[in-house]
Image 1 (cartoon, rainbow, N blue to C red):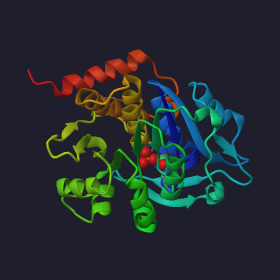
Image 2: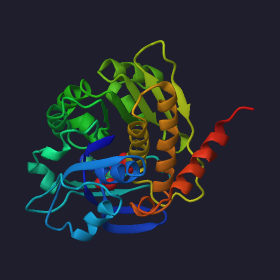
Image 3: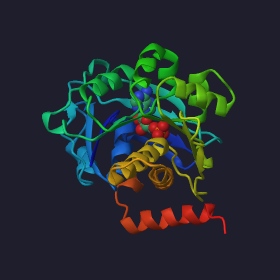
Image 4: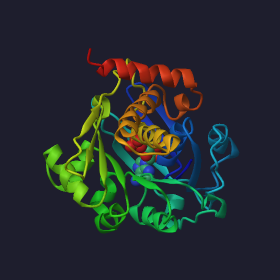
Amino acid sequence: MSILVVGSVAFDTLKTAYGEREKILGGSATYFSLAASYFTKVRVVAVVGEDFTGEHENVMKARGIDTTGIERAKGKTFHWGGEYGENLNEAKTNFTDLNVFQNFSPRIPQQYADTTFLFLANIDPALQLQVRRQMPNVKMVGGDTMNLWINISRPQLTETLKEVDILLINDGEAKLLAGDSSLPRAARKVLQMGPRALVIKHGEYGATIFFRDGGLHPFRAPALPIDEVQDPTGAGDSFAGGFMGYIASQGKLDRSVLTKAMFYGGVMGSFAVERFGTERLQNLTTEEIDSRFELFRSLTHLE
Ligand code: AMP
């Protein structure tokens, strides 16, 4: 099975309690694909500028990620600046330079047409919808978004949500999207907007999956307490990569697969935050991933 992800491939300028980094490789599609690459074949659709080098692209290629769908445009790569204070679960955006994303019109390469799973990572919802419409036959569609788009592109986002099967967002985004400060109520309202399932990420506290079908009760997976969170950037996208990657590797979608996917999401998110940028996601081993999965299991196991 394969996953196609559309999202940002970016440069990030970051500040955390552990230091600062200037223009390092980031982006929602980058974190997602690196995390998912440990489970399944990944294809990327994105745009980068002239400042994006072969060395940057090799970070993805080295993980076997198909980068044919990354378009090179005139101009500069998307550049995001963010920092984190005491609350590691919330990034403060310092700047968002859309650059080449301003004139981006995503096109799906011919050889991506047989892709089975689609993930609409965090970008302008109008672009997400454009890609969704070009992939009508996929088995399942996952999606993400952020406060910025909920605030400035709600009509487009509403259209996109109708075409998403599983939406993954965080607590704040769910409450903002639903206009409700109660999380379970917000979840129900978001599920009325289209998705069949909603994963709400609670940062360092884990994540909960809610279902539109009232007969299916929610399930919560914890997050692993990490000694040193050096850089929370990409935790959400890496969670989504582990979650969707595991689902794609199983090829079926029952409750057991979904609950395990919640754990694999947590595993990949926990690796991402241990180092700055994508560093930790570049060279993991299956043993490291499996043993962390077992840690998650023992954390929640009831004798
Ligand atoms: P997260 O998993 O939420 O920490 O995602 C962090 C990544 O999202 C960073 O690497 C940024 O480059 C990317 N990002 C931030 N803002 C945007 C935006 N408006 N559109 C697309 N990607 C973004």
